[in-house]
Amino acid sequence: MRLEEERRERYGPAASRDDGRPGWARSGRIGELDAVRGLALCGILPANIVAMTGMAGDEIKAEPGVLRHLYECLVHQRFFPVFSVLFGIGAAIFLRTARTGAESPRAVLLARLGFLLMFGLAHQLLQPGEVLVYYAVTGIGVLLPATFLPRWAVLACGTAAVLASLLLAGGGVTLIPGLFLLGLAAVDYGVLDLIARRSRRITAAFAVTAPTAAGLGLWQVLMGASAFGTPLPAAAGVVTGAAYAMGLLVVLRHERVAAFLSPVLQPLGRLALTNYITASALVLMADRLLDLGGDPRVAALAGTVAGILAAQTVFSRAWLRHYRYGPLEWLWRCLTWWRIVPNRLPARPAAG
Figure 1 (cartoon, helix red, strand yellow):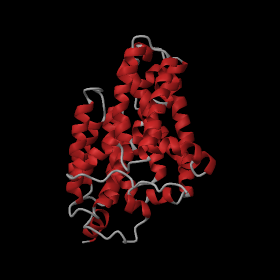
Figure 2 (figure 1 turned 180 degrees about the vertical axis):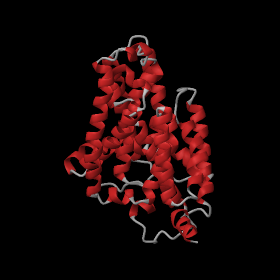
Figure 3 (figure 1 turned 135 degrees about the vertical axis):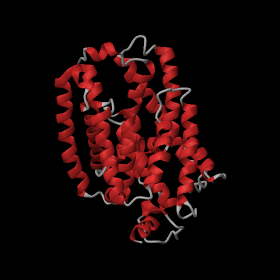
């Protein structure tokens, strides 16, 4: 009986909007969370460029130099875990907000994940190694069933799955189930409330993850090429990703920093699906023009990353002045609910 009451509180039945929940639970949107998602997109882009253009050859791994060490310790596998945890968080938020408009929020989530699979299959035409297919399949097979479990079981299973992935499989896509579950558990344990209140616990988490990430990164550098056959790079990636996310949440408390970073990162994060998929098309265009894979150059890679992110930031900000959801986000929402969802924002009254 107690478990059933917890399930009803977490995922339904339909409830009034005036139910005492915090603002994020009713709107499903936290600006800081969008910023973290935007940061993850920024870090995933160079890793995808390296993978898509063939810049990450075994001959480079054999004798890693300074630039390769920087890439491996600061970028590779560092942002993918953040994005995966955020996906689990997003699913939990979706279920909480869906209960105001659906008798069976889980059925709606199943539809949402099913249509994400279609997006992923289409995206594989541009990027065969893309992650949306894994997200959709894992969401259906792991994340959705986990909503029937108590939060302590979700946390325990997520932790065990992450450790098993690191120790037995070396990370990669095998981390997805565990990270999804940790994101799901994070919402039930009030992490979003801590973010919304700018709790000092976020600072404490950063104080732990940052030096740990630095130590693991240094260990990876000292091991050289031999580190690639161990769980160390993936473990360092998970911890470094957590440090990145916690660090961003800490600096966003400062108004001047937030005024600089939020207008860039939040729009990118709000249009995450649109930006993730369109980036692949832009990468292929850049590779054709610059031959990134055939003639790898750091300047060309950095310029491509900067150019794509600049273009996406400008587009995202301009789009959100007139619309609630990004183009693909809106299409995904319409397919999920099987109706046309209003998207255009009300016209602003003329000044004067």
